[in-house]
Image (cartoon, rainbow, N blue to C red; front, side, top):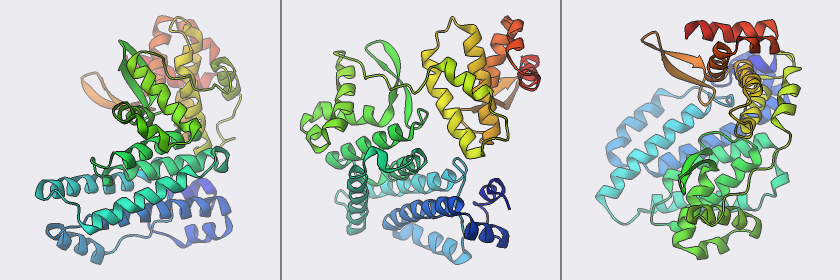
Length: 352
């Protein structure tokens, strides 16, 4: 069984073939172990929030048994964690309505979050790969609902470390990056550093809880909120032109689905650097982002979305859809692509 086939089956009940593959492939085994650890943490957080009205349903679910999860793909496996986080939010809201003081289980859950935040703070930026930083960012963000809104210090440190993990993962996309309005200007920001800056504005002493380097990053967003300065731009590893040139030369089967996903995010990072007037480069960039997302086999935002076509809602490759808009206005742009990629974008142009 290939790594690609194994990763597609990681979310399903463990088969003999998957089990055999994990015994021989260190990369897939490492991914499966890491995700099981994340999943275990979230399940413990959910258990900490259990209350009597839900106990019967939860016990019934446990008795029915859960399929053994051998791991997950970059996108698909996060669905289970998101469901767990949603359950935590719902139960925590009920608890807050019934009583003002946290119960011992909640205090224990909060303590576990603090332990993970402090452990993350001790990891040097070069101590993990981009993939592992991405896993850590997702692990931390799923625990956000367990921190009481009254615990400002822990929320501040959690936001700062989520932002740092997302930055080190080099994945400038939702839920870690997004657009905000500041001083009448729309800009892309590290969402969790932006959240941390709001708390730091109210309590500047919170910045002293961070390392000087991390405090500087959060402080730059405080200055952006006050209009004194803008967040320092994220360092670019290469120009958009160079990135497009590089990716165009990669055959579709030369990278794993996971590596294609990372490539899509890297290309996405360069979009804000390309002027709206440079139609040719934006067209090529959108085409390659769509191609990378297609090869990654991850049909979800920010690369796929639902739009209305012919009076019906349909899911589209969002960046091929954007490229098709340019192609309708400038058909000569098709000549910049190979025949297969041009055909993919023509398909969307015909739908318009």
